Length: 229
Ligand SMILES: Nc1ncnc2c1ncn2[C@@H]1O[C@H](COP(=O)(O)OP(=O)(O)OP(=O)(O)O)[C@@H](O)[C@H]1O
Ligand SMILES: [Mg+2]
Image 1 (cartoon, protein in one colour):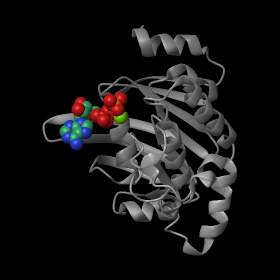
Image 2 (tube, helix red, strand yellow):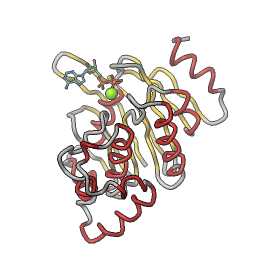
Image 3 (tube, protein in one colour):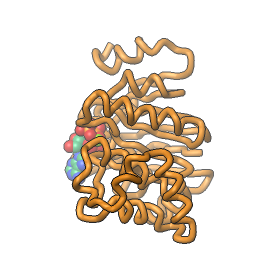
């Protein structure tokens, strides 16, 4: 479904990603791990067209390089960005409506779908998003992405800065989404992410240094992530 080939991202003199190859097949739940500054967000941003890159990215066989971000959203690619970035002065509902901008006719139905998944958002639909807790804002950011009915959902560190109980809730939601849509999840929280993942990649200094798949022992992979063994 997604094929990234020899991807390089540079910010001036800084090389954030160097020659990365990565694939995600339809229905898979793939996790991308790496320490601070490894290049994880740069990879997701390149896929959705938010940063310039070299190399090739194919989504469902179509090369993306010439397509602006909104066209990629229309094709079914949607990013839940690091740090959530909800619009604090807009209401919860208005944030969700923005997420559904690509299909205005479907808005009401999709709102009901995401409210079913996140009842707390329905309760708070008329409040400014800035008044929500960090966990609720993360739920709103995920729900906003789901409003676009993505085929591939890209998630950038959804557990960052949240209390363990809230992380638990976010992961319960991700578990519910698993199998229903294809997911590429970026995390530093390796244990939680690997419990859900079909496959894993490890990025270090802009390069892929390890992969983990299916039945392989997770412990080995986790050791690589934390201890560099
Ligand atoms: N807009 C930018 N301008 C200059 N350098 C940048 C920019 N964005 C990222 N970088 C640099 O590129 C490298 C990769 O950053 P990136 O944000 O992709 O890493 P990350 O793995 O997502 O890190 P984190 O876990 O902290 O979110 C880092 O060295 C970072 O400082
Ligand atoms: Mg990041």
